[in-house]
Length: 193
Image 1 (tube, rainbow, N blue to C red):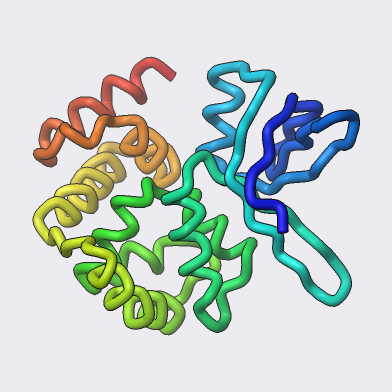
Image 2: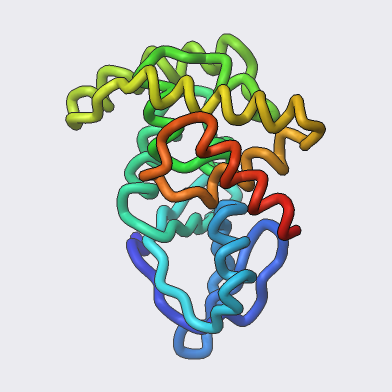
């Protein structure tokens, strides 16, 4: 099992990176957030926590910036019907804390906005992960989660696409709590692009 990988980035595409470790290139699938960070910071070296998915006809390596993201990914792929690629897509749409709040509050509407996740799959994710998250000490914070959704909807009503709005909201520090403050900060970020 490959648990962690450190090396030089030999190639970065829109879905994966190739990490050169001692002359061997490892293809590592990463979230769009991590890929954007790598491009933004123009990083040459990287250290990732990894999950090796082994199937009959393939072996794929998935990389994560921190151990918490890896654990959340592994909880997702333990759910029947959620494969590694789907798990990575789910992780790519919002910060882990936002996803945990959505699941903890039983809000399937946030998850169904993810391409490829229908209402039944979203309900299954909520049912299977809510107890696991509460057992790990994660509290449901309905107010904060609602504020995130309200900020997303406000930005969409101003003419921004869902992806643009989500990307801007991801960049806002978690200590900015109120909906209006989050929208204001997101507008500043969107104005710079």
